[in-house]
Structures are given as C-alpha cells and as structure tokens.
Length: 339
Image 1: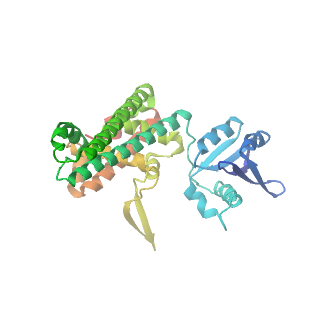
Image 2: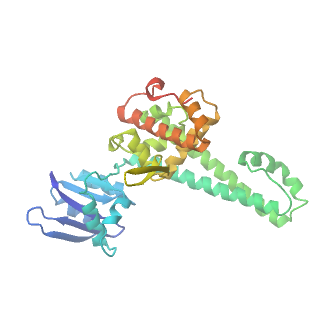
Image 3: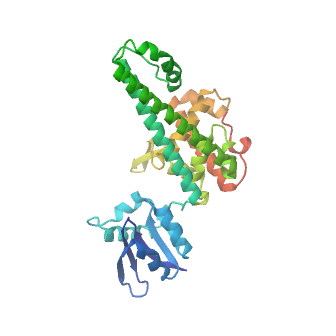
C-alpha cells in the first residue's frame, strides 16, 4: 500500500467526485463518477489511502472500500470545511478532503461496524418516538387546560389519572372533541408500547455484547448509555486517551486565550449531543442518590450543582474509554468511586 498516495472522495447520492495528485509527476487528477461506477473505479486502483467526510452513508462506503484493500480515513466535516478555498462545489469539496486528510494531527472518525450502526439507528428511532410521545401528551394537556382541566406534568401520573377521568370529561367537553382526545391518547399509549419494545431490544443487545456488559458495571451507566457509548465510540483506539474521548463528546471546557493567558470557559458541547446528554443524565442520577464518594462530595461543596454534573459526566466518559480501550473490567479502586 502506498502510504504517500491519498485520494479525496466526495460522496453523494448520485454523483461522486474524486481528487488525487500523482506523486511522481504532480499532476492533479479530478474524476467525476456515477454511483454505480465508484466501486469498479476503486477496484482498479492500487491499495492506497482514501479520505471521506463522515457524513451520510460514509461508514457503508468505508467498509466497501476497505474490502477492496484500501485504507479509509473518515474526517469530521467541520475539519474539512476550512479547506474549501473558493465556491463550494463537488470538485472543491473533494480537494478540501484531500488537503485535510494530510494535515498533521488531524482527528479521524472510527469506521463503525454494521452492528454499531444498527444500535445507533435503534437509538435514533427511540429518540424520535420519545419526542413524538411528548408532543402528543403535551397537546392533550394543553387542550384540556382550555376547559379548566389540569392534568399532571408527569406522563406516568397522567397515564394513571386520565383513563379514570373520561366519564367526568364527558360533562365538560363536547363529544366530538372528546372522541378525538381519546384517539390522541391512544396514540400516546401506542408510543409507550413501541418504546418498551425498543428498550427490550437494547437490553437484549446489552446482555449479548461483552463490551456493553463491561460498561454496564460502571455506576450510573444503564442500558441506554452502555449501548450508545459502545456503538458511538467505534474503535476505542481511535482516541489516544479518555480525555480525548471526553473532548470528542464536548465534556471539556472551551479555552480562550491570548498573550500567554488562557481562560477556561463552559464545556464545549461539541460532538455527539445524544451520548453527552445520556452521560449528563447518568451523572445527575448519581449525585441525586447522595453518593459517598469523597471526591464528589468535596466538589459539590465548592462548585455549583450543574458544574459537578458536567465534571462527573466527564469522569464517566473517561472511565468508559478506559474499560473499552484496555479490555479490563471496571474496578472502583482503579477508576475511582462514583457512589
């Protein structure tokens, strides 16, 4: 494999753009390909490094190109964008990918396996169903509030009270509206059944996957966090340390400095917002349970609650990386106590 030869590939639905430079003559090669021509084109190329943006279908293309003997590099789009010199075109994007791939210290995205992508897809479906359920239940509350009927904000409390109130609602709400509200509430119940089914599938994955099982031993890490962390991380060796993984999730402070003086700001909130939210929820649940960890108790004494939550989420992310990268079970004395 020629390590010095790099191909920049801008992927799309139908039209693909290839950018490369001949290492012997310096000639710039730009090739436009249709979708059905891409694999045939790369099958004729000698094994070399192929760089892509980590966008839609990038992981599938990376696996296909790797099967042809190429070494694939996935780049975060935000690191490629500064290298688009002029107008944004397919050719300019391919050239920017080619340029960014050769920058020293460039951060890459691990190519995910079909199983990891499937787990993440299941999480996306669950998040969408949860959002739709919240919208539907909030609509029921708001509509009944206009008739002076106050329902609890908790979905669990609402599901316990509302079925028993249908008879009373018949005297206050017109029949045609009541029938529509029953139908909408039926949709909310259907969302609950679908969410429960996805939770069972994720629990089955956690039990079958040794990596998810190992991460689940960390206090505060449940089924959702364990499966999402293992799938989103990809190959743990992509990150040099737990801190780099925490930075990828946006759980480290932003920095702003000049003249040798650096200020620490709030967390950067870059990277996977879904996994970061799960880790923040996990950290919050640990703190609410009144932990006996000396480090956490002292932190809560001198810093605000939300700052302690972010710090603990950072610690959880580092611990998850250490368990997966070193292939060893969670040990409280080694990784630090959380509870």
